[in-house]
Image (cartoon, rainbow, N blue to C red):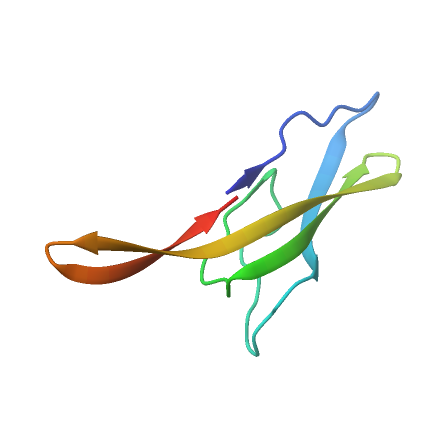
Length: 89
């Protein structure tokens, strides 16, 4: 989950738009609910992603920032079974 509520503006923030700028995107993957100050990521393929956030204020001015997110597949042993989970670093 990425969270960006620290945005400030001299007027009012009108919108947030999250996008995946680069990464190992699989066919059919789509960001859902990507227009708020919080982005929940799920079902990502392991790899490194650049996530872009663009904020627009009430005057129509825009500013963007990017974060790098790495998803790793982690294996662990539970009840004698080898299981995998994904970690977001």
